[in-house]
Length: 98
Image (tube, rainbow, N blue to C red):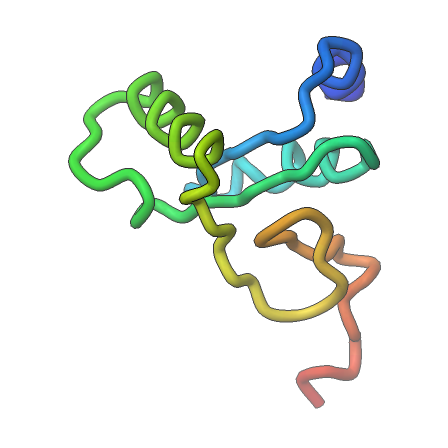
């Protein structure tokens, strides 16, 4: 995962948009957020209505992000990295639900 992030930064990528589905996105998202040069936009499924394949979803998210029409999903709690960021488990407030 770190090699992917390094490659993206080396290629001059400054923004990454990704769809949050299930739980599989979390490790990728956190790895991307570690790169200070990347702005990571985490989008929910509502951003890709009517799409039928992952490739079409990715293309649509990239187009929305490129023209500034993609807002990150709100995820409650903790410090946010990027737009629609998710705190790492160790950053979460353990007493928040007491």
